[in-house]
Image (spheres, rainbow, N blue to C red):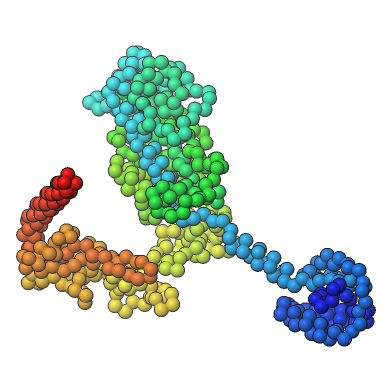
Length: 614
């Protein structure tokens, strides 16, 4: 333990006598031991005051000139040297606060750990959705080419005439359908002919980066492939097989396995996205700074899309199920899309995924987006519903249901959190309850396992009112979270809304009509969503009340959302006619204002030219 003693009044560094040095060192040791026992650290201010006191006490001591000595390096244990390394003479320094500064640096480094920003997640999610839209439209383009009469005629011309006559002789009279007893043998013969016509490629073909069938001249390439039967496109062979089967009255589906950009990303990939977004902000003038740190690294492997897989399904009339022809042996695509003969676009991923619940779902939009009661992403359902794909095929719905029931119960507790069939009570949200608690389908580590279908969502009384339901009189809450009492749907009834009386629309205490759901519309009234409806009703003298359809929340404050008005039903026809006339009047008024503005601009231009000419 050492002290720094510097005296500016002396020209050289001087050291006190051996006895004084020994006394000072002993006092410092006792003081440090006392600080360790009390659990505190010696502060810089105390050290400075000790230095000043030592200087005052040692002013009267006698010193002798000694040569300069370099201070020893501080040892471990907080920067203090041990007793064995203490020199007898020399000028040494005591450094206080190194540990604190190093710990602060470590904590600051922990706080500045890089994370994936919300903006990067949103960009990746929209990229994922855009690629899905592209592949859905692409497989529909391929389906339309296969459904063309010319395409089917070309495919049928490749089949020997003798086989065509045999298959047509097995048709059901008056129906484009092969008899069940001949369907299997005819399909086997047709596949044998097709296998001899078009040999499968030995090398793995890949789609160019950023390209899809919709971006290429597909129709010309396909007809060229039918003539030469040589192609490097992975969708040509399934298209020819689908056209051949459809020409022979077999019910088929054209399938594609899609792997879009993964929703999960590394910190490095997120940093690249953020850097690109900052550059875009600078280009459009949203950022004042002109210096950004752009990454020059190549994009990660996960940014490159995987090549899609194409194959054909044919309906087996004997077993009443769809059978895949030349489908990949190992299916790892998170999305598998099929288009049938009627143009319906279906999601058949559950049929092919080996572990849909635990592995495939984590790669799909269901892991980050709202889901329906069936556990499918609402956005994905809306997209497929454009082509009638929002429901499963009735003929394979039973097969999918049996496959889901036969799915083994998860072996890890963490897998129960997103399992659509089984649930543990520990994974329930605060507003969820299991009712009834029977049956208990199993146990894992002594914890009971319940069916997911028995999990119900609880809501407050106000929340049920906004859904058009009222809590029954005398019902006890199923659960309470603090001061909030929660009720189940079985404890509520449909809200009875008062009807329109004498042309007056019933209102709430704020003079509005609560219209959170359509069932809350008062009997004898109509909802008009036009923004000019309230003004027109005021001119016509029709009783109208603002329709409250919800609330928007911003910075902790709730703002009511109004959409149109609620009027008596007998005044609806008069109001619609007045709104049409008002719209025409507003359009004419806007046209006249635009003409007046044009005339004013031309007048100003001519005046300016006249002044300049003078």
